[in-house]
Every structure is written in C-alpha cells, then in structure tokens.
Amino acid sequence: MKDTEKGADLTTASKSLPLIIEGKNFDWGKQYITGREVRDLVNASEEVELFLAIKKPWEDELILDEDRVDLARPGIEKFFFKDILLLTINDKKYKWYEQYITGKQLKELAQISLEDVLYLSIKKPWKDELIDNETSVDLARPGIEHFFSKQVDREIMIIVNGKLKSWNKRKISFEEVISLAEGNASSEQKAYTVTYLKGPKQNSEGEMAKGDIVFVTDKMIFNATPTDKS
Image 1 (cartoon, helix red, strand yellow):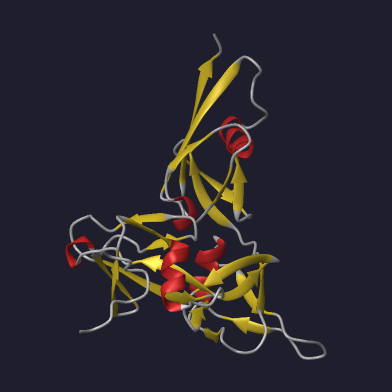
Image 2 (cartoon, helix red, strand yellow):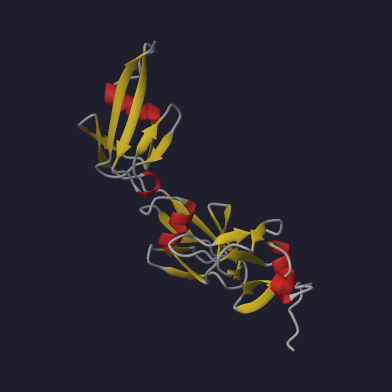
C-alpha cells in the first residue's frame, strides 16, 4: 500500500482532500491549508514565492504564509513556485519572475513613458548601457540589475477645450490644464471639472482633480469645464 504524503493525518481515506504542488499529488486531512503548510509539504525555499494556479484569463494568485486556501471547492487546487528576481528602476525595488525582461516591460513595470530613455547602470569607468524597448536583459546574472530612466522633453500638441496647445513636458498637472484652457490662473469664483481622452497607457482616459498630474502624449484631449461655486 502506498504511503500517504506528509500532512494527510487521516483516519479514513474518504476524509482526504487532494492538492497538487509543482505537479506532484498530495492529500490533506483538513478543509483549509495555509501557504506555510504548502511550503512545508515540499520543504520549499524562502527565496521563492507561492502561487495558486487560476484559470486563464485571470491571473494566478500569490499565496502568503498566513493565507488559507479552501481545498473543498470544486476541482483540485494546484500550487506552484516562482523564483524571485530583484531589480531596481530609478532606485525603487521591483520583483520579476522570468529570466529575461525587455526595455518595454521595464518601463511598464515602473509606469514610465515608453518614450523615455532607459539605461542599465554599469560599474565605472564603463559606460551605462542604453536599453531600447526591444532590448532583452538577463536578470539571472550575479547581483541585482539597476536601471534608471531619463525623460526626453519634446514639443507635442495637445487639445484643450477643442484648441491645439503646444506642450514640451511628459506630464501635465490639473492646474496647468486650467491655465491652458483659460489663458491665466483660475478664478477664485470657479471650480473646474477636467476630463481627458486618448492618453498614454499609464492613463488613457479619466478625470483630474486639484493636485493631480498625468502623463501626456501627442494629440491627447483635455476638457476643462468651469463650474460656479455654490
């Protein structure tokens, strides 16, 4: 008779609940299992993160040590681990789970403009490496890769209340939109509603409130509507 896997602790086979960890079948004697208990079943390293497989197109679920998963739900729950690869972009830490990452993926990860210039930091006296959007970088090399970006300011045209306006920055504030719409600072007797369309991926459309800042792209549309204060 085949031995039950660690963690079964069963009195009868009918009480077992199946689960799969990295393709291997296990039985569990309770309705719920924690992330820590899943790790212990396979002696998983602390350097990897645990995920619960979710049917596409939904994303797999990160399972922390204290999280509980209900094994009594329909179907068999499948768990797997992902190696963590660390990197920094503009001094902020990020995680990645694949060996390679492209310049485009780096920019999307850090939510910076695809038009910005991206570099891989190289130890001096060697020059920093330019990373194009299509360039693939191996993150599995020794050490942590450090990236940094530089904004490229260029003149673009945006549309504010139906009129073309010249703009030379990668971002625009609520107050700057109002200034372009009115030609001067906003009146103290007015409040404003600002909406935008056809923006870049970081903010394709939406509303702005006082103090908000959004990325801009060529031919982006803004509508600033004054509203008398009550």
